[in-house]
Amino acid sequence: MVGIDSDLIEELRTEAIDTVEDRLTNLQEAVRDYKAGVIQSEETLALVRLEAHSLKAVAASFDMKALKVLSHRFEDYFYNVAELHFDNCRDILFFVDRMSESLDAFINKREMDVTNLMRTLPNKGGFEVGDIQVAEVEVMLVMEPGIATKIVTRELLECGYRMINVASTMDAIQLVPAMRPDAVIVSRVMPELTGIDLACALKAMPTTRDIPVALIASDKTGLKDLPESVPVLRKGADFADDVADVFMKLGIL
Image (cartoon, rainbow, N blue to C red; front, side, top):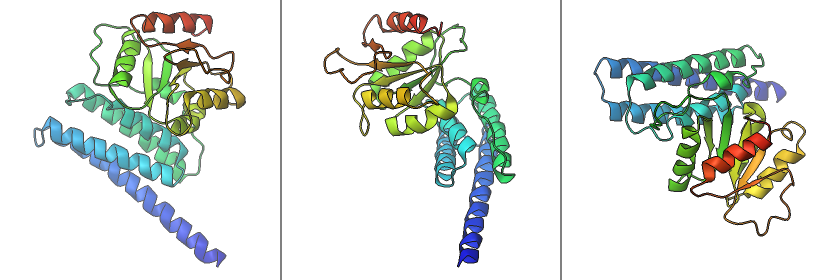
C-alpha cells in the first residue's frame, strides 16, 4: 500500500512539473506570437492571464513554495494592465526565467530563497505614474479588489513604492513570510480574517513580527484589539502623506 501511494505521489509530482513546463512554454510562445503580429494585444493578455492563474493553482496544489510566490507576483503584475506593450513582454519573459529557475529548484528538491529575488521582479504594470523614481521599498497592500484598492495602489505607486496587491488576509498570512515586504498595509474590513486579525497574527509570529504593519480604517473606534505598534491610516486627500509619516516613524524611510 505504501508503495502504491508513493508511486501515485510521484506520478502526480511529474504531472505537475510537466504542467508548469507547458505553461511556461505557452507564455514564451504568446510573447513571440504577439511580437510577430500573429495575435493582438487583447488576445495575448487574455492568454497570459490564463496561464498565470493556472501556474498559481498548480503551484499551490503541489506546494511548490517558490513558484507559488512568483506566480502570485506574476498574476499581480497584470492587476491593472488593460493593453499589452513591448515593455510588458520583456517583463513577462523575466518572470518566466525566474519561474523556470524555481521549477528547477523544485525538481532537484533544492530550497530556493525568494525573499531577495522579490526585489528584482518588475514593478506592477498598468499604472501611468509619470517620471517617478521607484524606491527600494516594497509595500504589500491587503485589500479586496475594487475602485478603492486601485486608488490606494496608484497613490502608493506615485510615491515611488514597489507594490504587491493581495486580495485575501488568508493569502497574506502565507505570502508575507516568504515575500517579506518592507511594510504591510491592510484594510480593516476584509472577509475571512479582518485586518485587525491579520495585524495581530503578523505581530504574534516570530517570522513576521518585525515587519511593520499599518491598518486602513475609516475611524479609530473598535480598535481595542489592535497591537499598539500598528498605526491607523485613513483614506483621503492626505493618505500618501500620512503613509510617508508613518513609514518615517517606523524607520522604513
